[in-house]
Length: 508
Image: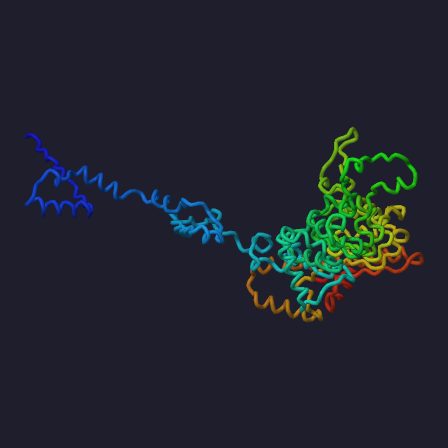
């Protein structure tokens, strides 16, 4: 039998009518019964065109309403010219919502990975790791002894602190008034900038402070400056130029002629000679520098003849080629080290290059009495290094025979060493911690391991400082005065631990 096919009937979808169309259709239905004229009858296309005109995009209207046809006029002239006030622009409508910031793909990192990471939050970092990092190194205002500093409870202290925090603003808008400050306030201001300023001091801003009368009227200059705190300043590219006073620029063509008519005494004296910018400087701080350079420091030694106090805190290992520790040169005899020291020089006790640089530094600072090497315990062994013949190191009995004090502390104490006065208290604390963590805990064991390594490294550095102090004392005995090494201030159990470590005992 033939198959029966069911015909599919398509129905017109029920589309809702726009309210304006429905109202117009109802009006036509009401009035059409009474009056049917060609003018009143409206087709669908006419209605659609009418809706398009009435519901035009609002962007064009907003553009015309926001634009001001009248030019902007100063408020003081509006009342005179009778110009109406400018309408307030409409608030901007956010068309799209802000996308949520997504983190890195994958599961979150384990907690143990974040303990020693510099990118981890402060709550997750270990105390020992954060104490050793350079971010938590304390900076003091009195890094140079004898510098003038106002009392903390005075208005002058708050003023200098506020100027240091907003130093970029003052160099832009007060650049013609900074040079008129008294010399004592200039010295204190530089010390506050090194501690509180978010940006380091540069050469251009330093020159604004020390303009002289030849450049700016009523400027105090830099002839009477004795303390110069440049801690954290980014000036090592032009370090030698900072301490040189440039000759004045000639104003006429006759003055620009460099060859004089005659070479007698009067004409030679009239020639422009580069002089020292800080002739009375005795205290200088170059600590906490973001990019220190021993080569730039040695090139500026002719300007350090009058220095008695110098701070090089937290400087790296003395080297003229710090970026070439692993570089080698090929030669017929084989590969040769590019620099004077390699990556393993410190572990092998080879301080030949570092001791040579310090020896050159000593020849340029003959009047030095106080040297700050805080945070430099990594290369403190270079101060007592000598070659196989007993020479080649720092000249403690010649150039630095007048050196009296050397600061070489670490500025931090491990957590298990500070605030403890008895070894028994430490043992009780360890038993208490072990009782609380009866079950083996990986995180706790890792923390204890890191603490023990940090404590051993700290004690080893303090012991190295004491060994170098004994070597220097032996070399200066009977030839020069005694030099004092200011070490990290520790008490109680830490002193016993250092004494036990020097005897070879286990202080774990």
